[in-house]
Length: 209
Image (cartoon, rainbow, N blue to C red; front, side):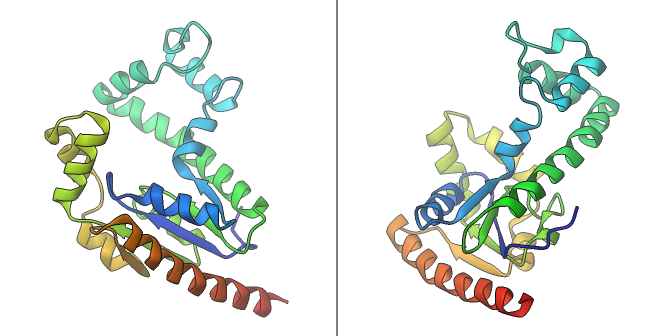
């Protein structure tokens, strides 16, 4: 399935960048947000084909007593076993991608946001008409995340190092929102960008009609 209908803005940013505040602000303006992290949970929800496939592969011990996925057990297994990790990725990535595209096509708003922390890493930018990087310094990422999630700085650094380097994201993004400043200033800049995105989305509609 390929994206053909709506004008899509891909929004990304590293952990602690504040991208959720930006996408929530756009939601308040009536823009539909498809969140890749939410979709990733939906495709392994109770009763899903994804969850059934995982249970068939790993055994019923991978499930909690209520039948939901025991994410901690699954993480421990794939951390220790590269083959199992590859199997899981080959199962989940197509399921997630197809569900994302279904939701993007079904969305009814002036344009649609695809929010994905790993937008570039997972090749999701190919479905977007433009991309926006919510950008902060690494020190800011660490400070915000340790304060918010009660994790230590070393953990946050490992997460940051596992993702595409900041400079690479900056080079790939069509738009960069500096979020290393008071939130109100960032939201004012988001409003300006929103108006530009509306114009681009309307132009796509005009060209397609």
